[in-house]
Structure formats: structure tokens, C-alpha cells
Length: 601
Image (cartoon, rainbow, N blue to C red; front, side):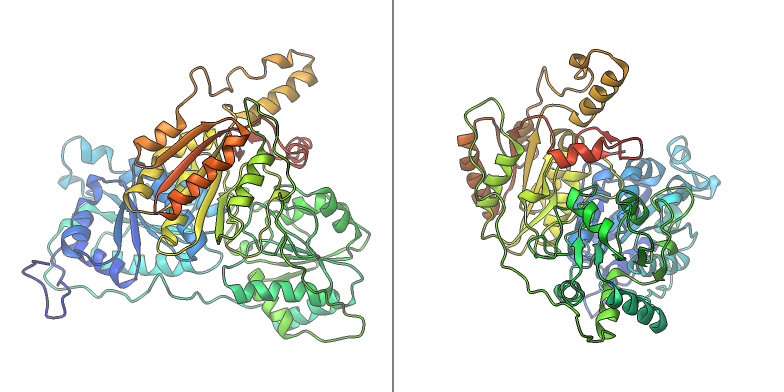
């Protein structure tokens, strides 16, 4: 580093405000900062490049601000750590707003740095500085941030960033946002400001439930004749995961999981009920109907879930969550009010630990051993040659190719029957995107790949063609920064979710269902998805429409990923859902309304 202000320690002395901001990011031990270039933080960009030099955080250039946030989202879900993101003024923030909402609803940590200004109007350049300055920039996304601030000095900005980082690390996590005035960034500083020592790797201090509440909960659970655990979001720590299993086994409880959250309980365990989905399976409804005590561990939409399964009179609910400390009235991601008999104000992981530590062995308490993992899809038969491939056969080919690999599925499409997959670790499957924002799949896949790019773990996503097309340019970042991953496109050449709904409405109105495809099909001409991948530096394979060729294509893709490449396989699949997915999506006026290809709105 050839800098006249370098010190004997090898670190520079900050001479501009943005240098101090870069020092904070370095000292906070951020691995990456994702950004799309913008003049409002040109000072910070210079400090990252010329002041920090080769020190972290590494710049991740993206081609769209929405991808920058989606990449940070996927990274946080798999690493458990926040990424820093820089957004260019109000224009970049508006681009990124949907991805920020996804991250907020999904409760992931993220430090976002905005930029504006000059806030002092006398310093603004004609035209461009005026349209890049707003009176209250964070108001654009304040309803789905955990906290925001607009400091006007560098020392204040450093303190705000420290607070923002600490807040985003503390559950319930959500993005935080700090606006950096361009003048403060570019102004020389005479004396180096104090840089707070908050680190992105710090363990958060998480509240625990009062011992009296835990004791009451444990008494109810141990006295129950039938316990059901709604196993929702969980951390990635293997020991905490084993504790969930131990708690279920000691209670003899049946366990339900949810595709909206990461894999929080092994689906191959004998206590696991049915197949996880976006809505309850038939087996899940029956289990909840029989339960006299339900323990919800960071479960998404507790009230809506229980409403799908009316239970016996006197069924008790114990709800372990910190969500009430975050929710506000703008977004309805708090869902309906769950009438809990007991609220444990802590995380599901902490509640599990507290219950186990207080466990009292009593006569009759059941303990259920685990069974060995099976591989769904072993017996799936190959279909006859045809113009398309079934999702079930695609699942079978992926299962066989990934049988001995340590794999993380970042995303699966709505039509995917979870019975085709087995998840036996918290990082086997990362869950949905939170807010149902179509186009998030590629970016979140890239973020997860960056989190493990120097390991043997394989990152795999099965995306709809609509999701891929909206977010495709995110894969350029994976190719540029050597983050290998496999994206399989379940390509039905349609926003098929809406075809399902158009058919439903047409039937209810006695109209022509054969016209349901109009305004839905991504065809005539069909986009060249494999060609799109190749144009962005990835390896593109397909379209694959012949079932016998699919296994060879996936095997080829796996070899390329293991060699360090980003690979996209375009697979032409049958249009349609599994019976569980279709029944859940069209269950009635209170069910989710699918829109586009792979998302719910």
C-alpha cells in the first residue's frame, strides 16, 4: 500500500471522513460489502479501494441494488453473519426496496449504508445532487427496517453504524440503515475520530424466558397426553439442532416443519409428521387436531397454522418467539394474533435449551430413537421420452447426483413436493425469502455460495423460470468472485401460479378456461436461459427436455461446480404442482394467493 499516511502498523491514518467509515467496516470484521457503484458514496468507494487496499471488507460489485441486498440476505442465512451493503442515494434505495422487505420479513441481519447529499443545499451541484437528495431518505423503507439514522458528521455516523450493527445482530434480526452525507464523506479530517469496536462476528446477547415461565411450560408439556412441536426458524449451530431433537424425543412429541423456514428438525426422524410445506399437510392437520399442547418454536404464522387445524377443546399453546419486539403496524407480517396460554419471550433455540435444562424425568415420559436417514426418490421411475420432464423425476435425478454430497438447498419452487427431499441438518435447506419477492432466488443463491466458497459444501437452488429471469444478472457476481453454485431452472415457460388462479376464476364465472394462459406464458419466443447464463460468465446447459438426458446433464453440472464454476441447467418441466402444493395454494379466500413464478403475494 503506497500511502503517505501509512503508519508503522501497516494501517493508514484516516485523512477523509470516508476513510474513518472504511476503518469501521474493517474493524467490524465484515467479509464483504455488496454494492452497485454510485456517486453519492464515491468517497467511501475510494476509501475501500485506495485507503483499505487489500484489507477486508472485499467489494462485491453487483449489477443491480436489489441483487446486492439479496446476496447479503442469502449470505446471512447460511453464515449467520451480516454483510455490509452500500446503496446509492434514494435511487439505489428504491431499487433495493423489495429485497430489503424480504430480508426484514425473513428476520436476517444486514447493515445497509445509504448516502445522500449534500444535505447542505448550498453545496449541491446543479441537477444531479438535487434529485439524489431527499428530506427523509430512510422513510422510503422505514416501515421494514429495524432502525435507521441520518447523521451529519463522521463521528456521529460512526456511532450510528455501531448502534445499527449491534441492533441488526440482536434477535429478532432485521436490516438497519445509516445514511452517509456525501460532504461528510469527502471532507478532510484533522484528527482521527474514535472508531467504535463492534464486530459483525460478535455473538448477540439474547434474552431468556423467566424461570417461572419455563417451569409452567415444562409442567404443561410433561403432563400432556399429546404434544406437537411447531419447529420454525432455528440457528445453524449443530448442538442447538441436536437439542431440538432431544426435546422432541424426551417429550415423545410429534414435530411439524415449514418450507418457509430453514430445516429446523430432521424430516427423516420418526417423530417428524408429514412433509413440510407452505401450508399444513393432511398429516399435520391430523396431528394438531389431536394435540392437547402445542409448542411453537419461532414458528411463522402460528395463528394461521392453528386455524387450518381446529383442535380439541382446551388445546394449549406455548409460543416461544421474540417477534413481538420487532413488528409494526405497516407490514402485516405479524399475522393474526395467536392466543397463547404462555409466551416465552426468547428465541426457539433458547427456549429449547431452557426446557431441556429444567427437564424433570417422570414416569411415562417417552423417548424415541432416531431412524437412519433415507433418500427420497430412490424408487422414482424414469418417465417415457417426452417434450418435458416432471418435477418428481427432476427431484430423483438431483437426489442421486447429490447422495453423498454435503449440500445446501437455498430455494425450491412452489410445485416441489418436500417428500422428495430429506433435510437432516439446519443448513440443508434455507427456506423461503420472507416477503415473497420474485427475483430473489438468484441473488440469495449467490450470497449462500459466497458464504461457503472455500468449503466442500455444494450450493444448489431449483428456481422457476420467472424468478431466474427477474434476478439472472446476480449470477455475474458469483462468476466474478468465484462462488461456485448450481442453479437448476424448473422451466415451465409460464408464470404458472397465475394460470392456476385464472383457471379457478374462469370456472367460478363459467368462462373459457382454455384462455387461462394469455398474459402468463414466457414463450413465443422462449428466452434462452442457458445462453443468458453463459453471457454472464456462468456455464449454461440446456434446455433439457429429454428425461434420459437429464441425469447426464446434472452429473456434468456437478462436475463443473466441483471444479469451481457457476452452472445453470435449464430443464423444461411439466406445468403443474404436487397435490399438496396445489391444495394449499387454492384452499380458499384465506389461503395465500400465488403470483408470478415461484412466489406468494
